[in-house]
Amino acid sequence: MATKIRHISTFLNQWAPPGTKMDYDNVGLLVGDPDAEVTNVLTCLDITDAIVAEAIQNDCELIVAHHPLIFSKIGKINPTDEQGRIIYKLIKNDIGLLVAHTNLDAALDGVSFVLANMLGLDDLSFLTKNYSISKKISLVSSVENSDSMVQLLNYYSAEDVHHYSVESRESDLRCFEAIIDKHHLPALRKGLKKEGLLKEGALQITDLVSTSNNFGMGVIGQYPEDGLGKNEFLHLVSQALDVKAIRFSGDVNRIKTVAVCGGAGVFLKEKAIKSGADAFVTADIKYHDYFTEQENFLLVDVGHYESEFPVAEALRKELSEAFDNLSVTVTNVVTNPMQTYVSDSKPKSIQQS
Image 1 (cartoon, one colour):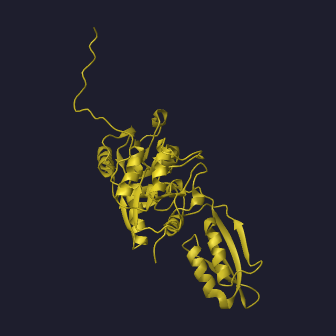
Image 2 (image 1 turned 60 degrees about the horizontal axis):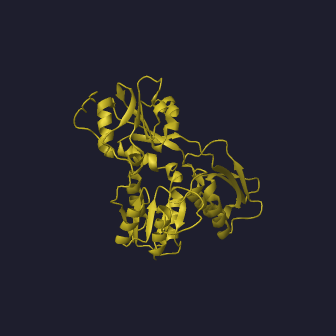
């Protein structure tokens, strides 16, 4: 069966549900026909003219990006400005654009997990789990339908302990309970209806006070044994992310516990400190945010592009494993608009006349 854009979109939605995106964000299929067939896919961080040219050259029918091209409402599409020119070229060359942004930031094995893996951290977990999207469901069904009910709940459950059943007073009925993330509820309803298990009054849904285990922001992990010294750690970060210059503040004897957040994550600084992190790696740190009263703590800015670009390779890997008939490549274009000058010698002082 041919792979269509909607198949890839469904796969990404299962990994990074659109319902977990920030309110300001714009994710999903931004350009293209969901029923268009796909054989070649290009993954990237940003959408630029050069990225589109690369997709055209490689006969790609779809670009999967992290950063959205379209945020606000568009009044016109023509090649008189950069955004219009890119959209115009995408449409003219039948190339779709699929985006997973803050929903991929929040996903298990998403942007921050990829960054943590690049830095060689172990025992990874979310730095903060603040997504209250899980629901408790209760279902009543006959004993003879138990196997079908268990199969559906196992598939859509949000927990490792997928479900449990309670015998009702009537011997031929059972009550099943499970925790389901809300974006799976429509599919669960559809599955129940298809199996003839959805009867009026049989499904009850209640909110949970606790947050979901599958979504959060930032990641915290560990280095083995005694960890690393400060300079050893900074060198590791530089090499792993190919960063020429790193901005940081603070000082630390040894670094064993590290928190990370791809992109602009300094809002998690205090959470990283309270979680016992010896260092926090993120990007886009403003001047005053570098100040911290915490002793033995390192605050590190590696750059926005550098902290997030590895997710393009993660997207390639996940799509390649999920779709055998797809050719998926990572862009060769460096879209980072920021450049760094590193002087080889001490600049001469200004001579006063």
